[in-house]
Image (cartoon, rainbow, N blue to C red; front, side):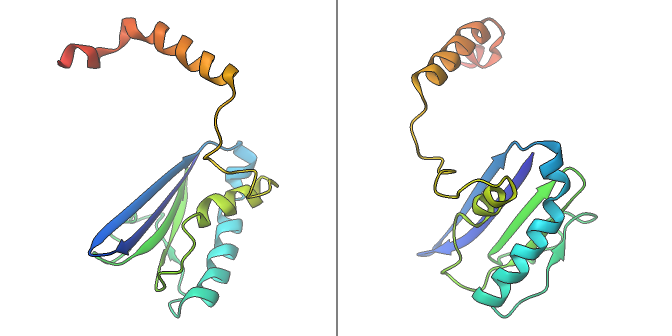
Length: 140
């Protein structure tokens, strides 16, 4: 599983986006190499802060200064963060990089497509079976 977080300022507000993408283990093992390359290229294009920050030992909260816009990617045994200096930073940077890792076209990797009817039926079936164990129904 890869966790990508993009935090950007927007009209007096901060917007955070978290993408959680399940990937095969072989893809996750190459995450450090792919993201190091992609973040280095991105830093050259979108800003002057080219230092790639490792979040492996300290985590993102102790690595990125508070109040700084940043991109963060985490996986099982590590992660990287990058300070964002441009409002033109692509919001789908993490997903596009993962699509490249999986040799998928970023356009086809679009999350906004509707699920097939078979997917909807599977989700509804799961919800029906889960209802017996759903403790959140007792909260109301």
